[in-house]
Image 1 (cartoon, rainbow, N blue to C red):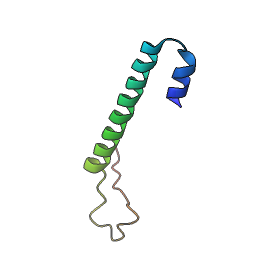
Image 2: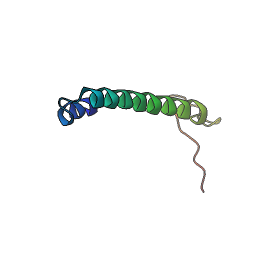
Image 3: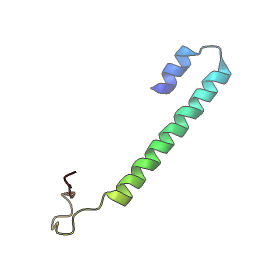
Length: 62
């Protein structure tokens, strides 16, 4: 959707369109990588969880 809006907003300015597409791609890859690492490192289920499919996570009170 962002690429469609970029193409509509910057008609005739190919350098800006290409720069916007690269920024959108890099932002998407960064968000995906950070989300994956977040879940991989911090998304461990509780040790006492018997049903691993339910994925109940430990919540601490701050």
